[in-house]
Length: 254
Image (cartoon, rainbow, N blue to C red):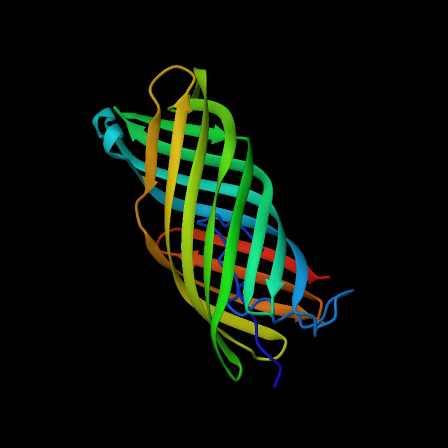
């Protein structure tokens, strides 16, 4: 039987998020490299991911409670590059970076609907993955992500009308996921649970900074990896409860 998988950090993210968690069995999915032998104690991998966050409910932090903010929600579109280093197919380190194509934060305040449309920004992050247990074709793994998005800028809308002031913002997050993966040949489905914490700091060009936290701290994820030979794979993943999102990613092993 071939050895199983490990946790991918092809985000995003993501995640960020609050983003893609990945297959708990990556990178043993990729058993050979283009230039590095599969019997080598270490290997290098690279990937690219796209992450769509449809909805993430937020809440104002304590210092922003007096502003009358209600029903804040966030969504985004993110593309990310991933460079990973694996040791003995059990422990991974990853560096993540990429553009934030769009980030939208909306909320209600004093009877008005506000929208902060961020049309630029830089996503950055790092992750570590560890396979805890392997029994035949089943793997149990844990994944930790941390990172953020810097230099988010764009227009600020009130009831759909652009205000004279713009905004800049940034966000930071950490995320811990645990999951089970099953090897069914070309397909490797997986399920798991995650907890995360995200902080979004909105800075209007005139006015007080507003800090938002994520409303729900835990959720579930599931996905499936498709192996294309022993050096390349594709992965799709969905997330629920703490956020609603989907990610698509791919990875190669050098």
